[in-house]
Length: 257
Image (cartoon, rainbow, N blue to C red):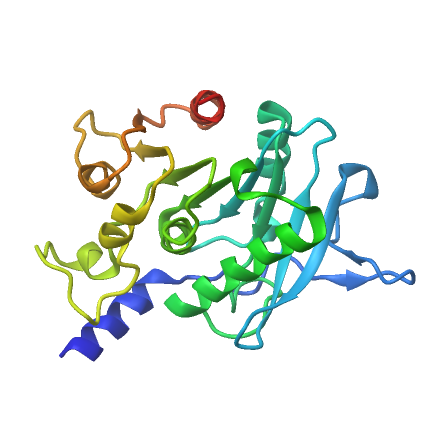
């Protein structure tokens, strides 16, 4: 029963765009590029190998005056080709570098999406930040949206000196999306409810809902935060542009802690 439930939860967790919304090309000088992203956008493309041998695509959006870097894990139904506008806006508004990556099986990344592959994927992206850009934990904010909260908390639970964690429409766990269970089973996936207890840095939870009620997975996660520095932002998406501006402003305040 456990394996069946776990497989069902995994099937509901991943919806990579099919076909992918972009491809990766290599220029004559060896540089990797994404179609439609010109050199003046100041963005590097990487093809990173994970510890299980998958090749994942990662993009690093540089800001010339950045104090911090955001490691962004996107939601379950998007790939990097759909995220360009958001990253350009975040970089401009917050004056940060942004590293984002596609999970195994998403976009032009090889392999198949799975819980543990997302953990290997974010570790590869983090290692690239350390090796290629000299980014320190103290200057890194990890940001996870929806299913991206899984790899985000996986990494945050292992790194004790992070600048902060942003959880946007996060989940408690895979099984809890399907059933309101009270305990964590061994066959569950993305056990965020357990891993958030191990996070020692400031945490910002963003709860997006049409309802005025402060109830849902993101808000419930706050009950298990062990750090003394945590914040919750409840956003009612009246307008997409307004929603983005609110998110930018809240994230900016979070950076100033």
